[in-house]
Length: 491
Image (cartoon, rainbow, N blue to C red; front, side, top):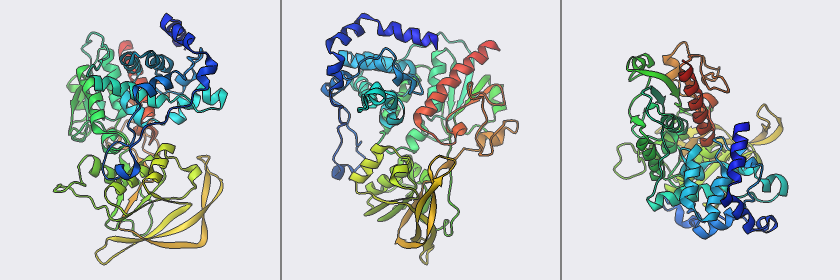
């Protein structure tokens, strides 16, 4: 920690930073209004998969960057799971050195263009911003600025590739190409390791590709970040299921010395209510994967998906929002969110909820499905829902929903998407009996080192957390790389 603090102080003391601080008094900086993200009109965007947020222009970015007072104690960094040097990259934007800003991001973040789009900054770095903590004002728009720097670099065609140490000849394997795996691979490549990423699906990117729709995170943005990893020497094997295609022992025989498991939480959960197996009731995982990755909504597809005119999505998280907003784009006339708690408890990002409201999504809060009905062909056509009220807080700290007797209602539907959480992918634990897991099926790891009960295996992301954000998975990938590097050096 002392090393980091002294490094940040020396960076802040550089002449160009001092000159920038003198340009405007702090009083003037703190009186500037926060920038608003440019967005495509709701009526226009629901007709296609166009990205909703269209980014900041140069003038907006520099004006927002000038709000940052370049704190002596940058608490925003402590709120970032990958510890980006936030004031430095923001000051580079204020200075007009946009490509340098992108380089600063890449010192610690493997996926800056992704994070700038899907990170919940409002709960992390921006929650720790001086404006939020001390002034009770809107924080510096760190996420918008991160996206700006990454997009500017990509559009300039001058994409920087992080420096890598000389190759040490040690082979390490990464299982899964989601945010945890990609971050781990990038960090190990920087340290000189020979990294191979094994991906079970036919495309690289994990949840970034199959779980997040293109109107929120375009696939070509993910592909550019992956291309940078390839240029750093990371190798990728698709259609490869570790534990099935080849075992860990097989990979050891091929020369792999250590492993990182970032295989995610791709196992859907259902609610166990009557009629849940009727046709037209899907998990959000299947619904989004088929549409995002397998183009199931396009004409002449081999794997069409059913998405009717009346679509109900059960749940209140980001995945539920992604599902219901996708249904709207596929032609749903009535697209509903059914959530058993109130709007205040809804875990989805505020931005996602606001975008959904603008797009005409109907919110049925304090409501829970209790039974499904089907037509003569076995296809869901109605849902019985029950109103709820909030009682005392449960283990999660949120108030427990309690059914209200006599409040039941029947709603007509054509498609139901269940988005009430996911469970860890069981393939790796099932293939390694000696690997310790929790009662939820997640891999047990040392909280600091992310090392499992098998010393040469490290793990992070949803396979450990059971379902979390992209940036938390990235933080795990980064920490696991540091721990594995120490383990291999000591060995």
